[in-house]
Each structure stands twice: as C-alpha cells, then as structure tokens.
Image 1 (cartoon, rainbow, N blue to C red):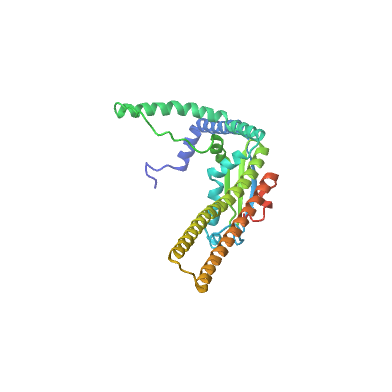
Image 2 (cartoon, rainbow, N blue to C red):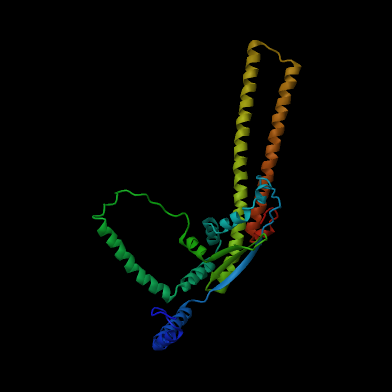
Length: 301
C-alpha cells in the first residue's frame, strides 16, 4: 500500500506531461547552443610523428654508461624533455620567417568568438573581486620603490606553442607519439616534425655539453701538472748545480720513466680531445647541410 509521500508512475508521467513544453524548450535550447559553439569553434588538424627509442644502443660521445638507458623512467624523462621550454625555444629558433608568420596566423585563428566573449566576461569579474579584496583588507600598502625585474628566458611564441603539443607513449613499447594540433594542417605537420628534430638536437646537446666541460677540466689539470713538473725539474737542476751533485744513471732513468708516463697520459688526453672535436665537426656539417639529424650516426633516439 503506497503512502502519501511516494510518487507513483502515473503521477510521474502527469508531471512530465504538464511540463512537457518546458522540457522540450530546454532540450532544444541546449542543442542550439551546442550547434552554435561547434560552428563557431575553429576546425583543428592534428599531425603525429612517431619516435622509437633504442635504449640498448651506445653513444660514442656519451660517458654516462649504458645503465642510465635501462632505467624504467627513461621514457618518462624523454617526454618531459620534449615538452620542456628548451625544446620549444629550439623549435621557435629553427623556424624561417615565413613559417613563423604562418604559425602566428594559425595561433590567432584558433581564438574564436566564444573565447573573446569569455575574456570579456571574466575581465570585469576579476577586476571586481580584486577591488573587493583590497577593500576588505583595508588600505593597500605602497609597493616598494625597487623590485626584482624577472624576465623569462623564452620568447612569447615559445611559451605559446607548447599548449597545442601532445606527447603520448604507446603502451608496452618504446615508441612515443608527438602530436601537434593547429588550425592549419600544414603547420600541424611542420610543428610535429620540428619538435622531433628539436628534441634530437637538444638531447644530443645534453650529452655533448658534459663531455665538453670534462675536456676543459682535463686540459686545465694537464696544464697544471705539466707546470708543476717543469718547476720541480727546474728546482732539481738548480739544486744539483748548486751542490755539485751529478745524477746517477738510475735516478735519471727513473725521471725519464716518470716523464714518459706523463707524456703518454698527455697523448691519450689529446687523442680523446681530437675524437670529441671530430664528432662535433661532423654534427656541425650535418646541421649546416640542412639534412635531418637522424642521419647523424652517433645520435641515439
């Protein structure tokens, strides 16, 4: 037996029939708004470039060893590098003036009337709440006469293009898909390729920079050790001449042996330096020729 508070099926249908016009009006209005928003929203194109990471390969200019590349977080780290501002800045610097203008035009075309209306509504609201907050907190304090002038190291375009980038790994594989969306289909394809090339160049630079710094440090150490050796030999010669000491053949052989050891170490360091400079020259030739960086053998990706 039903109580007075329970709603029967007949009452439910009666309520729906009574408010049928209101329900149909709301449903029609929602469909109309959705159609208007869809029509006014710019059409976006998405281009995707796939990158395969050969973690087990070795790089002749990398001194970190193979254990780093077997880390399970390696793919996640590379995704973070691709999405970083350094790569975005590299992409922006690699654009020609024509490509840059096309990219800026595509970014401007992405703004729809809906975005402009949203901005027009949000701006007065933000100003109102900001003024209300000042009134609630009393008289605002005067800003200091001197303030830190902090500027971003990246251009506005490099900070903007990252919003349309999507980097997703394929499950249970070593492939990463770099996707870029734009209102211009050619710009979408261009930016997907540019991001892939900029990542390879940035990643290679991250490997070469430590090797270059190590080379500078070893050169300084070699210069210091050579100067210490020359000073020690000069002091020894001066002392022997002052005291009239004639060096024996055994002592002379010992000094010559030490000198040969230092000379061999110097030759090995110079050979390592020449190898590093050769790899750097090859990379510069590839970059100057305009060929894709994937043709450079030592690059791992």
